[in-house]
Structure formats: structure tokens, C-alpha cells
Image (cartoon, rainbow, N blue to C red; front, side, top):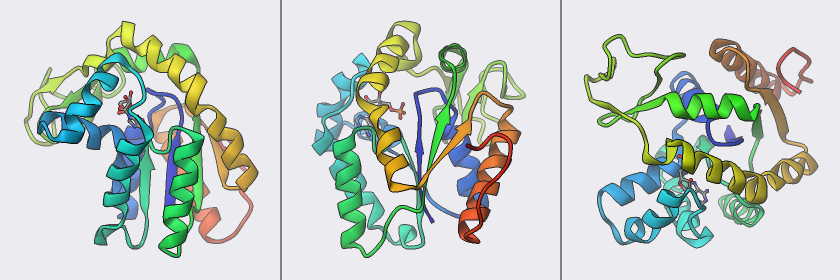
Length: 227
Ligand code: AMP
């Protein structure tokens, strides 16, 4: 299955992608993680992307598209993947459609995580990431057992610079301006499922699993939490 997770920053896409990826054995491809890795390893791409990420702006399409192109042709993606944070503009979506067409594939599902602005701010300001394995935590909703330490690998947890309040409002503005149009784009394609992402994490996971199951069995999806 080829799945896209779409929604504002802080909607819980990364957390859900980790779970679904583990259970469904589909690689979780986060454009944000790939870009941050490039910044950390100081590659040419990373040097170009850094200032955009720090300001909460979108990295130019060409840079992100090239990173995703290289990733989705890898062997582990042959049976599908979960794209988290890509595409973020209609032009990226069109390039993705074209890339998949050339590989003889297409997207099966796009989950649109709809969430209130208050939840986004609460989630992002409390989000902590493991510096070693990248696992996501939240100081209130998904705390690690030991303060500041990752349960999975013992790595140190940190707050992303762009999760600070000033940058969060810029990221939300950019989302409304440049990414929200994708909801209509995928609705027209008939593959969009809206997930009520203000709900409890486990309930959201179940709703996503149900939607995947129904799509695989070609059955209509009727249920709470998925529109
Ligand atoms: P994320 O981890 O998905 O919140 O992404 C963090 C930052 O990486 C964003 O604020 C952008 O600066 C950049 N980024 C991630 N994905 C994309 C994309 N598809 N297009 C452009 N910029 C992106």
C-alpha cells in the first residue's frame, strides 16, 4: 500500500506513521526527518535546506522532490510506504503522481489528519524527540518513563528548534497557505480519508487500521472518526 499522511504540523502524523509502519511492515518516509538528517550530516542538500527549516518555511520543491525520488525507488519500498510530510504543495503532489506512474504504481490512500489549532500548539510545544533513534514523545501525552531519556534506546530527548512557539505559528501559516489545497486535490482523486486527529492516540490508530483494511478489501468505510 502506498499511503500519504497529510495534515498540519503537530497533528500526530509521525507518531501514527511509526505505529502503522511497524505493524504493516511499510517503511515510514518522513521528508522532515530526511531533511534534518541532511542538515545534521552537513551535506550540500542539508546546507541549502537549513535556513528554510529554521524559519519554519517550506524547503524549495526541487530539493525535497529529489530526496523523495531517491528514497521511494529503494528496494524496501517495492510493496509500499507511508509518506509523512510529503507532498506539501500541489506541485509536489503532481510530481509524486508522475514518479509513481513511471514506476507503474499509484497512491492508494491519503489520510488527512484534521485537528484544531489549540491541539497543534499543545502537541508541538510538548513534543520531544530522541536524539539517537528519532522516537517521538510528548511530555504530557506520551511521556518517557525516565525524564529526558528514550525508553527504546536510552538516547537523550530534545525539543526541535522549530517546535518553539514563534516558529510554530509560522509553520501553521505556511500550512494554511501552501499545503491545505492538497485536501481538495486528493478529494478529487477519491483517495482522501479524513481522520479526526483530536481523538485519543490509540483510537486514531484503530481508525487508520480500519480504513486500510476496508480499502484493501474494497469495502466502504463507515465508522466514527473517519470521514
Ligand atoms: P516536519 O518534520 O514534517 O514538520 O518538517 C520540518 C520542516 O522540514 C518543515 O517545516 C519544512 O521546512 C521542511 N519540510 C519537510 N517536508 C517538506 C516538504 N514536503 N516540502 C518542503 N519542505 C519540507
